[in-house]
Image (cartoon, rainbow, N blue to C red; front, side, top):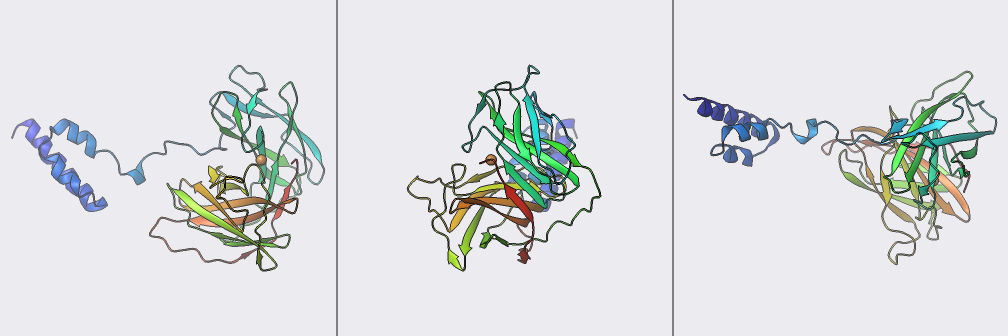
Length: 313
Ligand SMILES: [Cu+2]
């Protein structure tokens, strides 16, 4: 047997193994007549599930693509309002002063406790020299993550993350159990939809008050709701976008708000939904488990008592 023929047999064997394991039926027929070398290349490619992640989620890095999130301090006394200042330093090493507006703001600042219980969505003020500033109160001692979500002028959107510390006795809380219902300040929010790893998952939040659907939501950050999704374990900051916008003629002002969320892996995610009604912004929080499509549907339980707040709007 000459070398090309031996290779061809080897490749055919590989193709059968792959077809058996992953149901890639057509691959077997395609292998035979092709030159061994190129076929070999094709069939040693791992199946999609085993491929390396090509896109790293946002928020895991303090520095990316030449931009660095630089807090002026990372230690904050708990229970005390502090002026939190930071810069985003650009590729030239200087603070960035020009930003694109996205969702009505030049920068969105999210501060979350590492256990996911405390959540703040803030909009700092930018001074001419590129220093961002916002009043911040961390309620409890512990470790926190701060995310800056922004688009530098002429650049790509980035979410940089840095750790903050509030000194003192620290008792981490368990991530709330998976739940599809949250209550916040008299509102009940029900979340429908399935988080599927590796796909854009459609989620709909339905808002009621006193058992009645809320149909006069107010635009907030260019939408009827703003959703932040963080992965439990590393607080990866995920890409979420609303479906439709106020004033587009088709998107209702409630009770349902629809989003598309992309989660990279199975596991638990903490979702924080901001919505505005009667002039006040509220945040409903959920723990949602992303499972592979064959997995079981998570059961719903009540979820209360998270410490959530907004300011800076
Ligand atoms: Cu924001």
